[in-house]
Image (tube, rainbow, N blue to C red; front, side, top):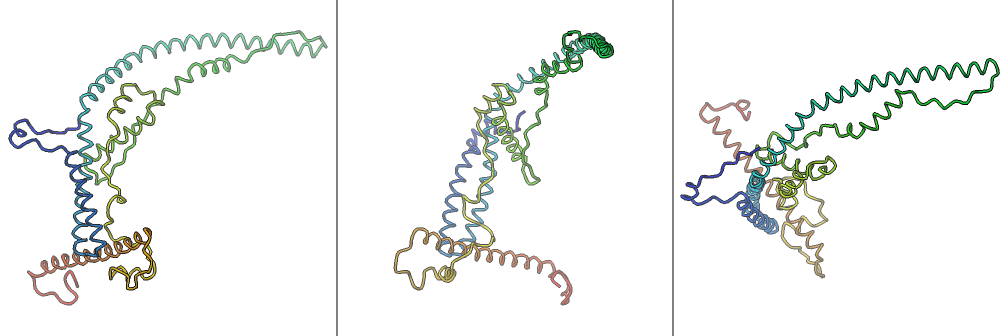
Length: 328
């Protein structure tokens, strides 16, 4: 099944130049995100609040670009193998139709064989019942009249038990194979774009075929195609790979770190050089304080914009009383 990706026409490409692929755009945006993240870290260390706020917005936008382009690149990569996958799809469809057509005649043969087996089992049961009754009569006669026990061959298990065991041994492996495998479970939410849902399905299918393909006895064609295509990329970005943006509570700070972070350097510098761990801790404290101040700056800006909108809404009407209007 095709993903519905529309490529520009040859005329458009000739006139305007072929547009870069999603993977090419993704590579560019990833570099820009790395650069913006590094600049944001430097602004935080320099305690440059306005620059920090500006770069936080830039990093957020670039993150969204990278997430979107990662999804599009995965779809493009899948589109490159669509011809081969489509041919395999048609071969598998023919294989399914052929197996389905052969199923009904084989089931009818099995039903007829089952009827014949049931008739034979009935005859076996009659024979076994007569033998069991004869054994009982022999033994009670011996008990009543004190006769020497007649040596007899042991009575086998009842035909129903023996036939059931034989049937289970014969059909057991077939029964284990007669399980309809559910399709892979994929993650999805209301905020996912159609392309992201497609990529989520790709990831889930690759995961299950890679992990379970041999146990499920999937055809070598399917397993080879999945191995050739490789694992699709996800659109998510780990927050650990970029600068922190948000208003989360900072980690605990050592005594005096807050004052040192505000003035940039300690009023009484240590007599011995800082270790790498101490320097990293001091930089972390400075960045945490900058992030906290930048978050407060952003909140104040959002509050000011909300108040401006509110004032604009009440301005056309008459002056509101102290307990009236939207801010009463």
